[in-house]
Length: 80
Image (cartoon, rainbow, N blue to C red; front, side, top):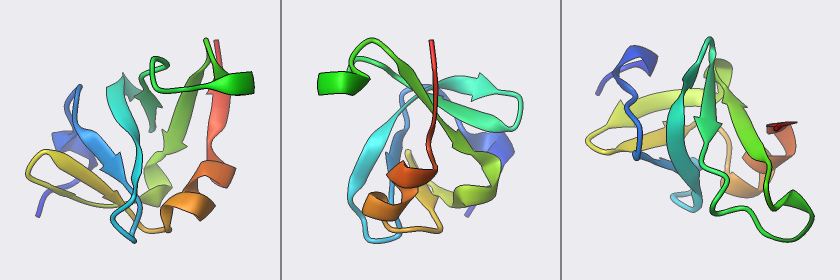
């Protein structure tokens, strides 16, 4: 197990339930910036950010969050 500082671009971000949330674009301060290519509908063309506080662990090439995917997306922040 590793921590926030071990997160690299292109890692998969998954909820505590193992469901895909997004893919890491890069680290932006204390947040994970997700790639915008996966966003659809009204979220298309926007980056989404996951707070460092939601990261439970980094395991291999996956970032596991402390919340299930459906809950974690409600905590996402939007940005251009």
